[in-house]
Length: 332
Picture 1 (tube, rainbow, N blue to C red):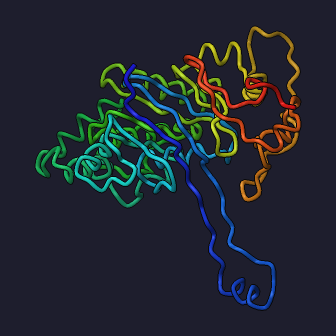
Picture 2 (tube, rainbow, N blue to C red):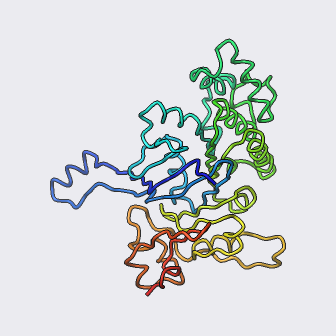
Picture 3 (tube, rainbow, N blue to C red):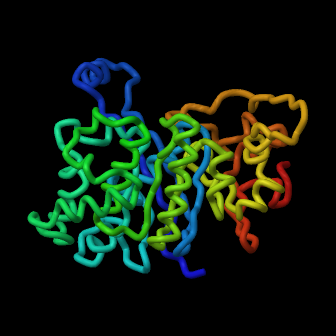
């Protein structure tokens, strides 16, 4: 399939500057320096039109940072992002700005992502008016139609966010994203803050919208059960790096990277009988001081000397891609 979104070696660094006390301490001879976090380190993958790609990994691995860069909410430190062939890395040209509008993001916590001082009509409709998709006079009808798409009564348009339940607020967030007629949605843990029964309703809503509006999704989640249900392909991240990519069926049936294997082994199964779950050995290292070579080697049962000194390359084999020395000549 033709790629709709392409990420080429995308990276993002966060640098913490020294405050005045630390600068003074350094002048006096203290060993103090600026801190640098490689939140995303050379991520490369693509998303085809109409596809749902799941992005998974432990908390702090860089999933949300990557999603925010794709949405244009964070600048890119290195690499390129292309949307239907248009370079949207900096969004400086009219073509890039137009392409950016077709990419929208839905956030994890609907209460903190909705302005508590604005009514739903303004939350959903202001961007559509600004971008010329509707007029101020026609905005109420436009908002009513958008609310109906996400399963909300248009009569709610004059209420404030605090007057809704968590599931309803998330639907408002979805309606706000849909109001500018996007083609690509980034869902950043969009159901994590909801009750399980409400999660199922919102997942079904995402699937209905995908079918009815021909949407494409980058679905970010730490819940592998949800990803297995909704995604066509899965991208696995660990400490800022992509370690495995594959179709959902192939990756869940036969994971090849040790980290992916460990994640999938922890998924509860109704047909698995009595199961014994073991956590992944050790803790995720600090991104301020990541391990050399393969970031996963301190926790990997198969790690060897090569893993400690050499960064594995993400090698593509058909629909699969694995960054592991076990797939490339061994770990010695």
